[in-house]
Image 1 (cartoon, helix red, strand yellow):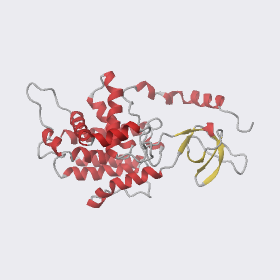
Image 2 (cartoon, helix red, strand yellow; image 1 turned 180 degrees about the vertical axis):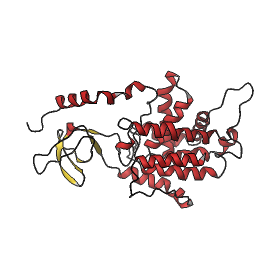
Image 3 (cartoon, helix red, strand yellow; image 1 turned 120 degrees about the horizontal axis):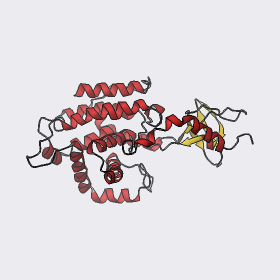
Image 4 (tube, rainbow, N blue to C red; image 1 turned 90 degrees about the vertical axis):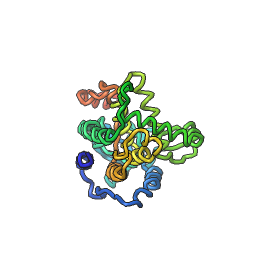
Length: 312
């Protein structure tokens, strides 16, 4: 099972192109475990504002910024409503704001390879392969239900773990989440902790999935996608495994979740935090919303029709 997980993680890394600037070997040291929170907070504070180009833009003056469709532009100045200043490929200049779409970034970077609205392959690699491997790990050593009981599912264990954590930290967490207007920052511009983001993700998934009686399997896949989006899936996994009171109720002593193997799994998952994912949590709730590539030519035509002329 662990080898299968490694293969699926390696396939995702390969899909992103294996950026030579990134260290793609797992760090199993105890120091890496201790640095996780600080690294996460640092990345969250310093993430840039980015936008994706909706279409090509050819520069006509030296102070303009040219780009191609789907280029990722770092937005440096938005003071003018129609004309922004940004950078792409080391070149800076002005460009029409309506030619780009601001990214809802909950991570330090954006990559087309991790966007399931652009790449169908990432859906297969994550929802098809990675989620299956993680479910098998969660099922390993899961206690069998009683004869009259309902079948157990890893999602129910995760819900129990989160409920337990919320009760333990109720006052602190409630105060911060009530004020929170974004996924990352509260009103005082303080970075939310990974466990607070986990609680919020669980709430959003239940709110959108429960009214449609979506299965526990789909909920689990959606939560894994949320963890990848926030680049803290490995820390969420550690939260589940370190909730001793709950794990003892749900798992046998020899399971991955209760054995030292969970630390190794966390370190393997940490590799994925180096990459930027933008995965829809409602992908399997509303599949019809993911057929837009068939109408790409029509979409491009509408964009060109509605955008103002940069030369006028």
